[in-house]
Amino acid sequence: MTTYLDHAATTPVRPEVADAYARALQVAGNPSSLHAAGRAARRVLEESRESIAADLGADPAEVILTAGGTEADNLAVQGIWRARAKEGRPGLVTSAVEHHAVLETAQHLAEHEGAETHELGVDVTGVVRTEELAELLAEQGERTGLVSVMWANNEVGTIQPIEQVASIAREHAVPVHSDAVQAVGQVPVDFAASGLDALSFSGHKLGAPIGIGALLARRGLGLVPVQHGGGQERSVRSGTLPHASFAALAAAVGAAVTDLAVEAQRRARLRDRLIAGVLEAVPDAELRGAPGAGRLPGNAHFTFSGADADALLFTLDAAGVCASSGSACQAGVQQPSHVLLAMGADDGAARSAVRLTLGWSSSEEDVEALLAALPEAVARARAAYRPRPSQQRAAVKEAS
Image (cartoon, rainbow, N blue to C red):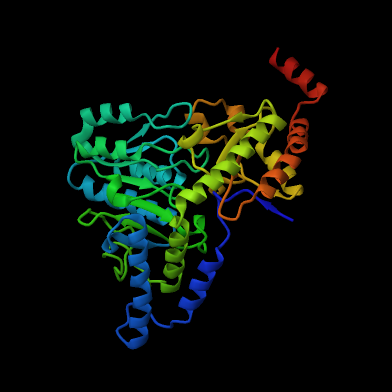
């Protein structure tokens, strides 16, 4: 039986979400059509929009449908920055530990459109340095068009002080976007109370199918479209609206926020048991990220010195345990984690990371299966990448 500990990459579709999706699929019609079938599909769409808004502290008019977190991030970062750059505010501030959907977008804008980018540093636990943001905006606030800081990190699970970030930016009239893909459904998210101007999230992290997400964007926020067409979503996001997928997203958000405190406590107990078990089984393993309540309840992230992450993951997989080394978007790419490097880890440690993440379907049995398989997996991964004596002698000879 497979032990699934990669919920941060994607989580299984919830049964109630599959039911909602199947029911909505029976409603034929394009939501933009004016006939009866189109109106029926539109009703499904708008009721789903209202449900999502209510669950996340937003107004229905602030919910913009997207194909997932990456599109939502791109629409927010490109759309907001371009609108502000037209006003003479080319500055674009991110943190050094953002998801690549934000970092690569910022880099593209810098290389091709003249964005003046700045990456905020983080401490050893991955928490963004808000004092650096305050100092930067005190000097360059009038030239800054956007601040984008994720709500919770997708690799190490560290939760960021989003309300403080928003408060600092508000003093300089700088809009703030947050990639909340990992936060929604794990910690309380209230868009209105957060002080944010835009927030991205993705359905497949919550138990919805892959390929659906949303951007919450404050009414009146300037957004330049990233793609063009019929302008179905506030004239900033074009494309035929998938009402069935949106119904699935609404069902997933609703299920994730229902009894959130109870579920978060359950996951945190499993996480703490997992962390204690890993540190007992492999005493030199190093837990990365913020401690306790400062990290997502479903996240445990370790580095294992002397073990290549890919070798360790392959060995765990052979034992029936699914885990990852970080963002699934970068899986198979032989490079150290930019998140761990920003936190001060060296290159070797950044290449030895394993992320173990829990979700709505996780159980004690999953934790025990991981702990049973881990010691041998670590030993094999270390042995496989330990230089042979002949290799060591050759390396010494070459160096001399």
